[in-house]
Structures are given as C-alpha cells and as structure tokens.
Image (cartoon, rainbow, N blue to C red; front, side):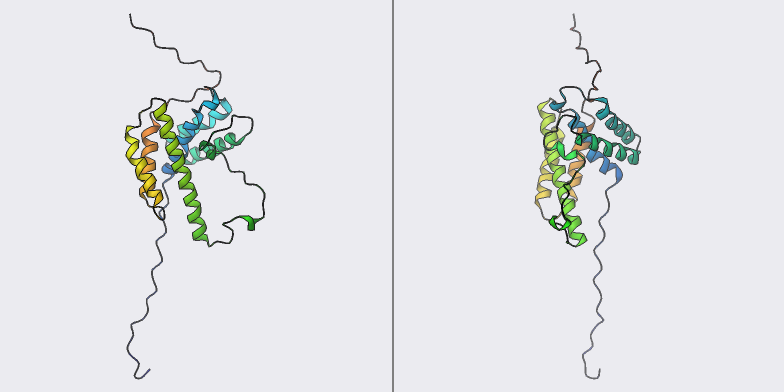
Length: 206
C-alpha cells in the first residue's frame, strides 16, 4: 500500500520441541527396584509366594538380558499380583506399585477431564514423579534401617527433592532418581520364596 511503512514478514514461533522419551531401560529400572523393595517388606513375613515372586524373577532376568519388553510385561503381571486381595497388603508408598483399579465414575468427575492434552500429560507426569520420589525416599530409609549401604544416595535424594519442588519437571529429577535405583539395585538381598530353606548361619571359626 502506498505510503505504508515497510514491515518485515511475521515469522511464526517455532513449536516447542517434543520431550525426549525416557529409554526403556530407565522405565523398567524405576519399576523393578521399588518392586524388589516391596517384596522385602515385613508384611510378607519373610517369604514370598511363588505366584508373586515368579513375575519379579522373570522381570529381573529380562532386565539383565536387556529384554526390556519382556521385563515390562512381567512387571505388569507383578502389579496385578500386588493388587490381588489374597496377598498381604503393601504399605505406602509401595502400594502404588499395584495395577490401578479406578472406580467406575462418569468422565466429567475426573478433575483432568476436558483439559488440553499437553496439560493433562504434564499433570500425569507430575503424579508419576511424585510417586517415584515417595518410593525412592522410602526405599532409602528401609535400606538404611536394614544395614544396606546408602552412602551414595544422600546427595541424589536431596537433588531429586529439590528438583521436584521446582516448577515443571527438570531433567535433574530423573537423573538423581535413576542414580539411586542403580546404587541400591545390586545391594539388595533376593526375596525368599515360600517353602525355600532359610540361609544357614555362618559357622563360628574355631
């Protein structure tokens, strides 16, 4: 248009990059190690029924073989076992490892119903992170109370708590959480299967 000032063409803002999905190994680790702690809880009275222990053992073997699909499938079965009423009830926060069984309610009763998908996903990610922090905190406390070394967990646990208190979900959170799970994983004793003999006490040296 004559006399109109020259204006540069408007450039649309670049869309935010999609978050990088966690590797399958990390997703399995965050379920496998707290499940191990759950199977060591006092509610099992020292031994775990084979029907409950078998999926865990399969998941653990698959994780060591880097077969993360098989490990995930086994952990899904374990979460169903944890929810079955015939087994001892897990204490908080380990009961969060059970398969969720939501009550049948109308969709509009869900506080997240109708939210835009990105906001809904962000809320779900936040809830998962809160569960992870509760599980990792309780696991470190349990390990410390049972003579399992937790020296390398103090700083990453503080980092995870600080990161979750910040807005959003910074990557430092899961870096710290994964470091704790890795630190504790190889230090845990195996859960004892119901019917298996207890370990014999060490003989006194003479």
